Image 1 (tube, helix red, strand yellow):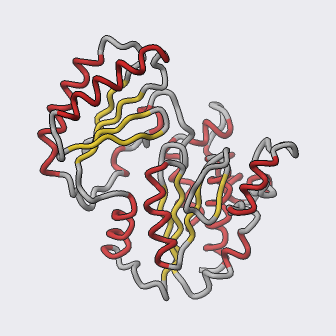
Image 2 (cartoon, rainbow, N blue to C red):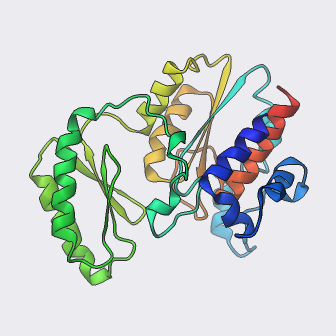
Length: 280
């Protein structure tokens, strides 16, 4: 049952096409999720050369969740496993067009809490102004994330970036103490200035969904972005649960374990699902 849920998740986001090619049908995916050992790699980061001493050293501090899987599971006895996942860069590879990283079925999206609801009219005003003022900078993509605005500059020329950032900062300056600017992977985000981040969201979900009892629940949080660090720190401060960073390069992080890319995330989730099926 748990394995089937993960199969449906990856079918929904279309990741089977990324992993296996466009001609693969559901039966092959079912087979791979069910019995094929090739899904469960040996835990070595894909493409890691022996010369990559920096990454190997980093792995000593943040070991692979795949090679450490059995020790991790030793802590799950008698506990309910709860998994929290970032999306773009964790479940799905980073893509040039963020729309291509979204789940294909919008019916899978559930909104539980909206702490920035009162900001929505102003966010829409900001969105329109940003699109009007940045339309002359080739490669700029202004994305409406409902409760924040993301300005992607992955395809913006280096010589144009300074002008783009100046425009964004100028727009944000019109709303002092109401909005602030944050940075991600080739993206600048305008967010409401409220105390709410992924760490707060994690605490809220654990409490609201009845998972706050550390004696009965073991949470996993997988993410690849700087914004996921708040959730990593929450699990570290609580002293239970596993924060797992998804990264192919060494970086400062509060995560305890690591996975290299979405393909390793898939391998980890498959192992986790099979563990859940074998030890319900």
